[in-house]
Every structure is written in structure tokens, then in C-alpha cells.
Length: 178
Image (cartoon, rainbow, N blue to C red):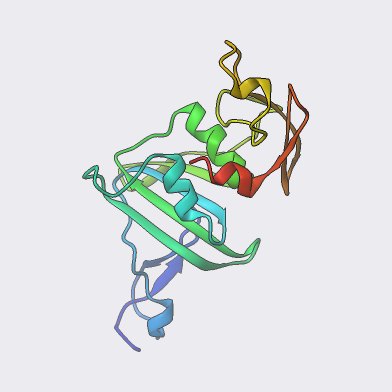
């Protein structure tokens, strides 16, 4: 479709943005607008955007504008998901949780429609009080006053080993908890 507009690939979010005059197909047209203030979570593995929203506790009823692009073409990942959240900056604990399902995600803080800060999530070596052990007999699931603690054995694929019972949990075990 020729719409009299030109689009360029945005370096901050890898989406197409309007520029001024080239032939584009309907498939290449941008359907998610830029945000003025907030956070763009890029390089989420394809199919995990909804898990990221669950991790952040976003249901769609908060009144915050949220845009989700799923299975977007990516030169680095082949396919990826992207989440844009208007008027929200993520806390460090939220970044740690996102790293559990998207260890290569990029967080872009947007101010005045431009990228103010860009960082990659980093999975810490130990995960404390974020997820529960999948082993129902683990002491961390009892009434004992201890915090569930896991050691990261691998970030991709995700493998977490319980500090107490040594059970190894995978990404699907973690996602079920959010």
C-alpha cells in the first residue's frame, strides 16, 4: 500500500516509525504508537510478552496504556515480543523477575518520546523470595521462617536449583507462579 509516508526502524524499540514517503505493505505499517513517558521492554523471547505482563501484575484494568507486539521479526532472535508501558518505570525487583523469563531483554526508559536510559536485564546468581520451590516437601514450603532461595545454574535455558532441597526448576515451573 502506498500511503505517502516513509517508515524507519527505530533504534530504541526495533519497530517502524513514520518518517516521510515510501511504498509499504500493510504488514510493514506501524500499529503501535510511540510513548511519551514510560518503559519499553524489548527482546522478549517470542510468546512470553503475556508472562512479562503477569510478572508485572498488569491486568489491563489499571488505566495505564499498555501496548504488546508479539512474534515481531528480529534480526537477533528471529522472532521477539515487545511490551510498551506508558507512565511506568520498573523497580529493580521487577527487572530481576523479567530476567527469569527474558534473560536477554532490553529495558528502555522513555522521556519526552526519546530513549532516556537503556539497560539489559541481568539475572542475579541467587534468587531470594521471588518464586517458591516446586517440591511440596521442601522446607522452604513449610511454616519455617525461611525465604525460598535459588541458585541460577543456567539463564538460557533457565535452570534454578533450590538452596534447600536441590530440586531444579525450569522456566515453565517459574512462569506458573506468576
